[in-house]
Length: 67
Image (spheres, rainbow, N blue to C red):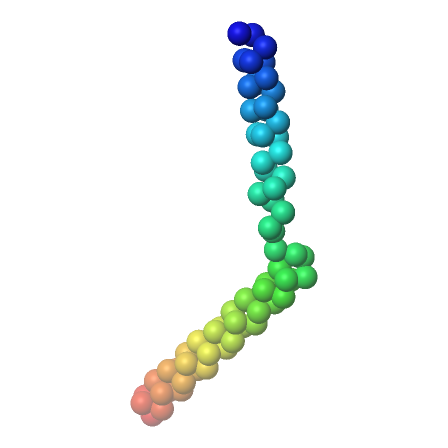
């Protein structure tokens, strides 16, 4: 009775220790992460520039309407 219980415990311990290694292999490579980060940053800059242009137009129209 003790031997099968010990075998099961050792087997479970091995499975629990090896499983995260297999799960972690599918991470994104560093180059791909950098590329994705750069695209995200570029999109943020484009969005910010678009918002700035719109804000400038709004301010310009307010100034022209005051005159």
